[in-house]
Amino acid sequence: MERRNKFEIIIDILELMQRKGGNIKPTHLLYGGNLSYDRLKKYIQELEEKGLIMQVTDKGKIRYRITDKGINFVNEARKIKEITDAFGL
Image (cartoon, rainbow, N blue to C red; front, side, top):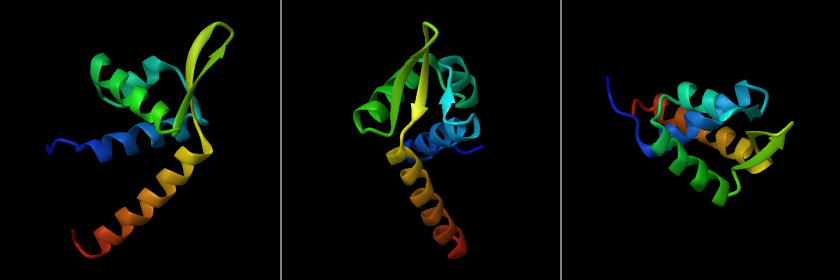
């Protein structure tokens, strides 16, 4: 099995958030993203800094929500994947 690159991991995280209705618990990200806790923390921090996700508190529990910018990023990334797949890259 090939290792995922940074771009693929970011897309996996954002798509997972979309599948969960755009709002997800950190533990679901941890297991669904198939990442160690330390690596997930780094990705979450970077995605927050870039405005792709935001941390929200729901009934005292931390959750992460994909932003409109994050949704647009995923949509554009899918287009790129379709093009690269079409050309066998």
